[in-house]
Length: 339
Image (tube, rainbow, N blue to C red; front, top):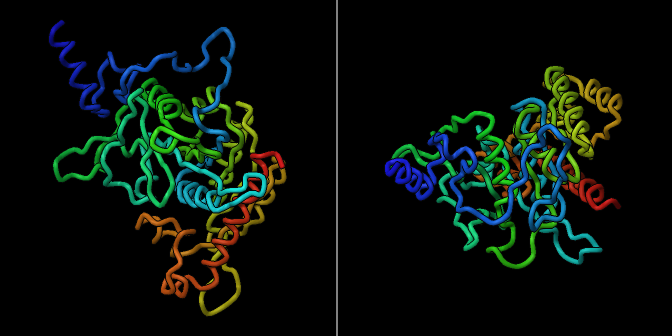
């Protein structure tokens, strides 16, 4: 008994998230106990009431049925594009945050240049404070993983959890993060949630527990990606999440010596056909731009880059990418506000 209690204290103190202990299934992130019940996944007996995320007005899910389509990159750049908006009714810029719900493969820390950051601090009430870079607050499982050694990168740490642990961790990331600036002041106007690919536990946990105001589905032109888009849209509709629209990523490429679009991954015709058949609007088609990948690897979202060398390297594609992203942000904001 004494050994068990000592083990619990050590696990809670170090917040060793890679340790699987039967008594920690209800608190996988090792957070201090907070008052009030945490929403649970509905069991037999009817659904529970969905609730908003604390200090967040609108929730936008960015999802894809298939991995590798650039969803996380678009989620981060869309978040910054939303933050650049200054709607007339608000009279100020939109306050935006990013929540990375990909438990097993978090990408937001790298895309934000925060992969080497320390663990996020806690408020006096035991809530997690977001990590901020480029003026945008973010939260990810990637910030919470322990380093496997004194010189080993955090990216080497693996989350080896079963479904119940994943569900509990998602619940804590949804409801135990204080999105106010330093735990004080106003919260967010929009929280962009970067979803993992597929239609599994994380998607169901979000859709069943949280009031999600809209979802954006990201795809590439290949048929294998479009098949999964259908499944993703069907899943969100089953949990009553409105679909704002779809985004076609890596739609075409224009080389520096010509003006003709080259459809490297296939014609966008099939994508538009699928979107029309599902009655989902197409928000935009993004070209293939080298700087988007470079910016993501360097932790600087592409909509924030403006170097002359990068602009020359990307030619007209880069300007088109930024303009389309900004237009999509305006459309998304109008849909979230019901304008």
